[in-house]
Length: 270
Image (cartoon, rainbow, N blue to C red):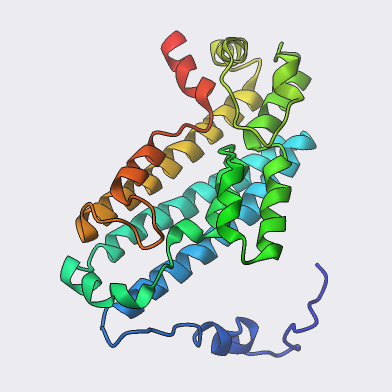
């Protein structure tokens, strides 16, 4: 690993290694309410966990491309544990009552989790491609450039299908080489490929394990989304979100989105 220019010298302390003075000086409540500190810390911690999710899943995608599936499994399993932390954080945030939130909501202005570019990068990596979401970041060209690059790259599922094709399964060519900036469209032929994997796990053990790791990612991602929905419903009811979204109705639609469709539908066919 290359040493950073700002890396602490040998013999550094816990605080200097983790840059704690900087990290712990990033919480600046804009109101005089007690609960705003909790609101800030939960969202900052979530962004750090998402940074780690991206670190692991991008490496997992590379490992799948290189046919190093065992390494990808370890990284994806780690993300599942991180997702558990993210899901549990909603329980802490939900201790903010409607009155508490109303008292500080004016200080939030138009800021919203909807504007998290790391969340959007995760969505793109998982395959939920939507170019319109990049417009949210029109005031930060560097972030827009990062999102545009992520939009056109194959997602985890795209690389999983390529891995299945390399194993000899008849994945349709139009699913292997397509416009990756567009949302993935389910295919009956792809479902047949996964059915072959689930029908003979011993023969296709790596692909079987890859499929289950993907299902686990989707399952936990949806629990995270659902936790967000129920927390917002509990704290603000059906008011509009601070970022201009419809709030609970918008989040309900998001929960319905599926990342890896054939891995769910194949369960009916087995």
